[in-house]
Length: 368
Image 1 (tube, rainbow, N blue to C red):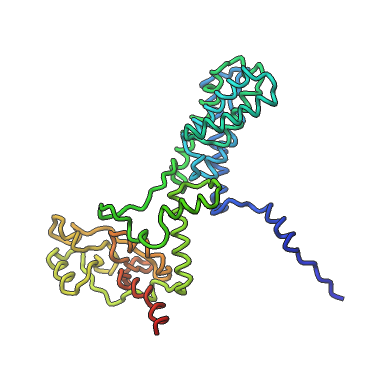
Image 2: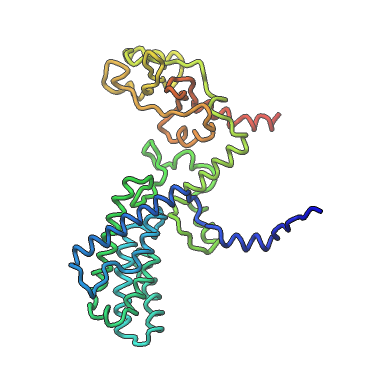
């Protein structure tokens, strides 16, 4: 007799989902980097603070909110709540509020509530909202005589000092990790210096749509608005690729290429561009290895040989999805992407026309 294990019900799956990490985009590598950053930088913060404070037995070298600040700083460095001003300002301002509340509200439970509530309000007004700031306010409000003895100075030493040292160490650490910190969400810019939005941003949703959607949901999200825009456009790109069957660069690239040698003179390159009505020439060496690209813009530079005026090439591999080239070929600066093999030899080129032809092919089929 064969026994069958009962399948979890929909309610059971919903309950299990509560125990699944919900941080989107996190990888094991990111988590290991976060652990390493916390190990090195929290330990170093304690060591530096001990050297600066002289081992005062009555003054903590590290306050508890620094543990929560380290989690944000190293696990979610792109969060608006994990930037330098929220870490330093949020902890210091909240500690000041907690100390002030403890002086005028003798009942601990009531003081705790006032301290956290006022800390949230102050951090919001000062644009330094930082979750560990609530813990800093509680620490200051409920610390008792040991904290009160230091007066308002406790907010600066050790709380402010800890936060400042930890942040500086975090900036140094992230120079060697794959994350940019402090995180600056750079909006897409028009490469031509005009007021028009970039071409890829002229279709689909816009900033007003994002604001309207956020208003509809009525929730606060821990992501910069510009990062949200970039994320949604990346989602659009993947959805577009799925609807087009994910053709590869090798499927749409031009293979019979017009190329120029690095030692050729610029007049030869100009003649090739005009005679063949193309905008981008791959620059190669005698083994057909890619060295750069050249167009009419580069020919305006002073120089006698192609190698003197060429620009760095934008490259792709033949097995890359062609849809991934959309951001590059719509940024207003690049007209083609050179496809190379593993030996960096030129095997093809994807131009804006090639990409446009791929995007139009489903429309032609529907029209037929």
